[in-house]
Length: 115
Length: 112
Image (tube, rainbow over all chains, first blue to last red; front, side):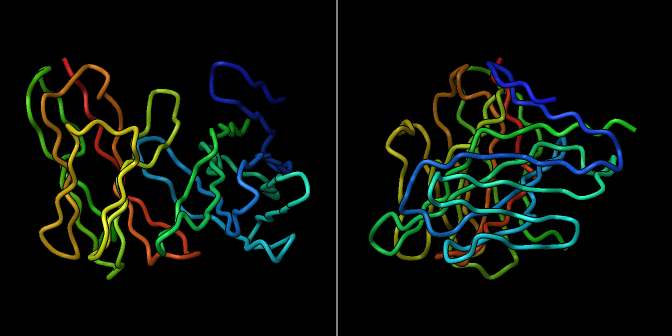
């Protein structure tokens, strides 16, 4: 199940099941979105991205869905494996003016895979 | 070869000291960034820098200053360290625009 509170939201999933991690973004002007995976002691690692002119994009075992109407992103991981255990972040990118872009991260969700 | 490398990986120091964290990239990207990750894993942009422009997050104290000796490096200098500076600092690089950023493995800064 998923818990939200003062601590990092956690999603516990049985190995082999599918995982869905959700994210709400804040800026309706954002036109590019990225999912990152962060393992313990490592930096965020790019998983998949999607531009605002799309509503779905698939990678290897991962799918990102974008709903601009409600400013919602989700990351689906098929056949979750122990190696998928990590903290997952969504990030939104928007033009901040003067030719620069700003990447803003969501709060993160910790995925724990139960063997 | 590590695309974005930071040194040191761990930094333990006393309050009031001045310290630097180094970042080097071999991706040839034009823009480099510094982020701070707090104990709740929240990642916040501190600076973005390319050879033309430094953009500073207004919430960052002026004790923090990025310095870029060349396009492949963006170092972070911190003066008069405070307890609240304890965090993990990440360097990242990107091509700008709608492209993903690539992160180093972080520097864990602990202030005693």
